[in-house]
Amino acid sequence: MKIAFIYGKKPSSTLTKIFTGSSCYHVGFTDGVKFWDMHLIRRRRLWSIYNNKKTVLIEAPVSITAEYLDHKLDTDEARYGVIDYGLFGLRPIYHFFGKSTRNAGGIICSEMVADDLNANGWRYTFKEVPSPADIEYALGGKRDLWNNRD
Image 1 (tube, one colour):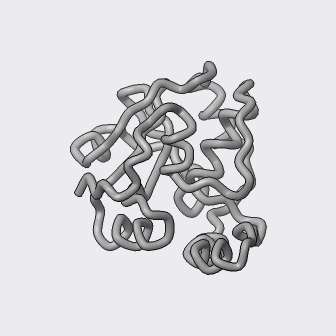
Image 2 (image 1 turned 30 degrees about the horizontal axis):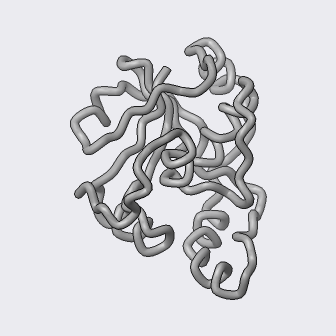
């Protein structure tokens, strides 16, 4: 299973770049045929919908199966954190005052990916809700946050 980091969609990439310094606006899992991500709720789509966009693929650091992700589709009650995304947008202000970004109880895409990786044995912890770029960097991706990839 690979982790797909999605770049280049306006205005999402632009907003995410303002909030985090990276234009990576979305993240999910792909087996090359399907794509599992967090939208309003967890969902599964055809990878071909995203494959033509600007993506970076990194091998998952632990074994995550399609069966696990499909089971989460059937059982997970998490909802997308609209308020959390808004708070995420205030991240630079929180950091300016030496604080971590608050969490209002919802789940954003990068949080879902980090939770699924940890549930399958990954032992990386973030100090706050990670951005897609934070996960990419933790997995050995480039820390060139100012690269638009647009």
